[in-house]
Amino acid sequence: MDKKDIQQPHFVSGEGVHVDESYMLWIEEIKSRYKRAQIKAAFKVNAEQLLFNWQLGRDLVIRKAEERGGAGVVEQLSLDLKAAFPKSKGFSTTNLWNMKKWYLFYSQKAHAEKLHQLGGELQNTDNLTTKKLQQLGAEIQDASDMVADGEAFPMPFSFVPWRHHVDIITKCKNIDEALFYVRKTIEEGRSR
Image 1 (cartoon, rainbow, N blue to C red):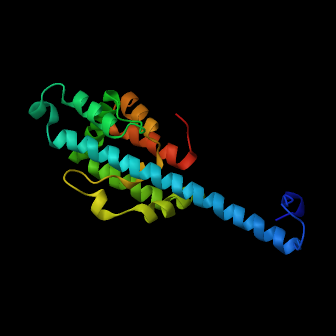
Image 2: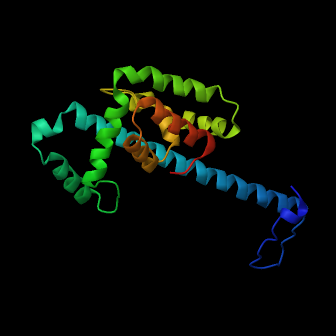
Image 3: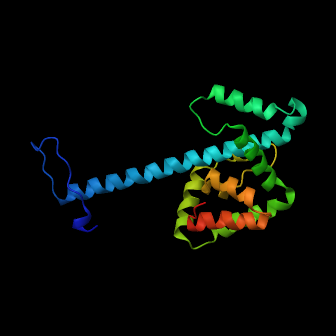
């Protein structure tokens, strides 16, 4: 680290404190570790939220919610979830329908091989960012949560924000086009 990159610390009291170059390097290393921990935490929260969305979409499909609960069951579910979690976002009727649509779009048996292939391609890439994302993904993967009734949650999806997923399934005509954008989002950090 270059000396000009190191910020001078702010002292509450200068009494009894000896600050040398070693201390300055140490404090910079601590700040760097903290920033990495924040990024990991944000990623894990996003990945868990995406897993929840996948599972809820799966539940709506497997339970045949509209058939069993009537045409307004998704609207009722939205109201119930909003009441149970008033500070949480993402429980609008539209978002619940998007979760179902997302699950249906990718869960077809014919798409399973393409999803598996995407994971393999990302593992074999030389892209440093993707390797870092894979390491983070390995930390959060819990097979019992990822595979339940229905299709397994595709791990590469953890690296793509929810709104990206909604845009992809809404605008793409087929699985190949959708996976192209999922891959590019992961590899290049593309925005919506």
